[in-house]
Image (cartoon, rainbow, N blue to C red; front, side, top):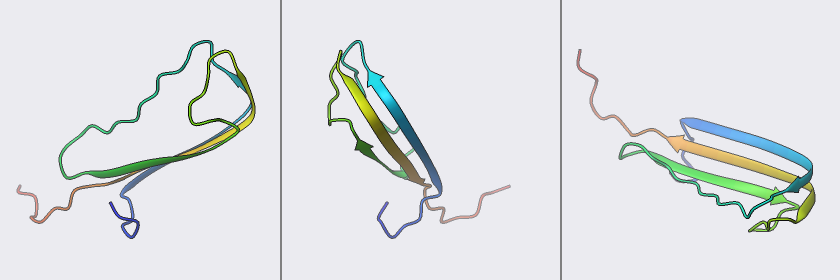
Amino acid sequence: MTDSEAPDVSFTAHVDGKRLRWHEDPETEVSFHGSDGFRSRSSSERVGLPERVRARHTYRDVTVDYRLECALPDRETEPTE
């Protein structure tokens, strides 16, 4: 999916937190599963959090904006009845 293509599906989330603390180092992963032909992308903007957060450290005044977009595969033929 290119920047000029509008996504067919879009999901956004906005999270604010006064304090965040992990007891263990978090294990995170973003993956896309599905059929061939789907074009997807995700992005996030974080304020008050480093690239990798640490356990037993308190982060204050954090903001996370997350966006997931997906374009469905192009259909060249009409569906059959």
